[in-house]
Image (cartoon, helix red, strand yellow):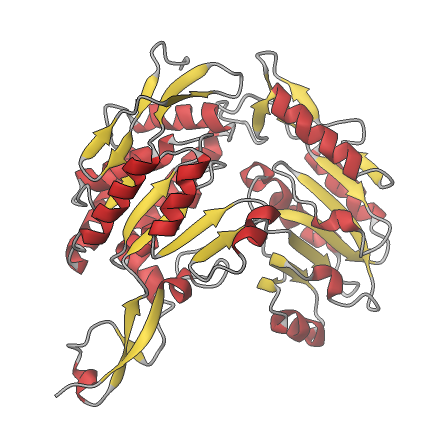
Length: 460
C-alpha cells in the first residue's frame, strides 16, 4: 500500500458535526511525507463545544453499552468515513512509526475493551455501594456510586492506538467526553469517535477538539475531570490539581533475586523490554539483578541484537520508527545520559536509517555500577534498558516510583515490602511480563476511583 496521493482531512468533531477549520496542520509520516490535514479549532469553538457537553443529556445505560460494543467492532473491522480498517492501520503505522503488528493488536484491544468498559469500571465500585437509588437496598440505607461530574476531557498521546481504550470507561459510566488528539497521530481518536457517533452516541456526547496549546488548557478548565499524558513536567504541572489525572513515565522494572535464576526469566525480560516497540509506560526500563549483572546484560543484549530494522508498515517490524531528526535527537540524549556506563548495545548510537528520511531506533543495553544510578529511571520510547546490581542493603529504595515491578523472587518478606510501598503501583510476582494488562485490572489504580464517589442514600 502506498502513501495517499490526496491528503486525508481530519476534521474537528464538534457538537454540531464535523468542522473543517481555516487553521490546519499538516500531519506527516515518519519520512516527512504529508499524509493528512488536521483542523485546529480556536478557543471559542472549544468553549462552545464544552458548553454543549455540559448541557447534553447522558444516554441511558443500555443504549450506551449497546453503542459501545457496536462501535468497537466498527472501529476495528469496518469502514469508517470511507476508510477501511486495513487502510486505517497502515496510515497509523506510517504516522506514528508504530509497527503494523502492534497497531493491529492495539486496535483489536480497543474493540475488546469497548465491549468490556462498563464491566471493567464496575470492578472499582465499593462492595457496599449500588448503582441506582431505586435498588431495593436503598430502603434499608446504602451507598450509591455516582459520577463526580458530567464532562470528562482527555489530552491523548499518539504512541499507539490502545491508549484510547481508557477514555471509553468514563463514556460507559455516563460522562460526556472531549478528546484533544495528539498531533503526531490524530487518526485513531477521529475514527473511534466517528464510529461511536455512527452507533448511537450523539454529537453532543463525544467530541474531538484538535487545538493549539493555549486552547488545549481551556478544554481542561471547562471539564469536570480530565486525564493528561506526558513526561515528568506534566506530572509536576498537574500534581496539585485534584480534577486532573496525569499519566507520565512508567519507569517499569524487573527484579531478580539470588534465589531465582535470571536465565529462566530471560524470555519475559526481553519481551518486557521490546514488546510494543518499547514505547509504552509498561515496558521495562531497568532490570535489577542480585549478584553480578554482567551475564544477564550480555544475554539480554544478544537477544535484542537480533531484532531486524524494518519500516513500520512491514509485518515483521518490531522497532519504532521516527523522522531522522527526531531519532538523532533521542540518540544524542541517550549517549549523553549513558556516559560512564558499560554499553552492551547502543554505545556508539542507536539510529538506523531506513533510506527514506526516517530511521528506527535499535535496542540499547547499558550496565550500571550501582542500584542507585540515576539512569535506572530514564525511560526512552524504544527498547532501552539499564541493567543494575541489586543488594539486600539497597532494599526497595531503587525500585520505588514504578508503574509495574515484576519481582522474580521467593522472598515473601521482600514481597510484603514491595506490595506495601505506595510508589510501586503494580506488583507482578514471578515470570510475568511488565506489559501484562487485562480488563478489570487496575493500571495506575482503578480509573473508577477517580471518576466516581459513593453517596449515602436511604429511601421510603
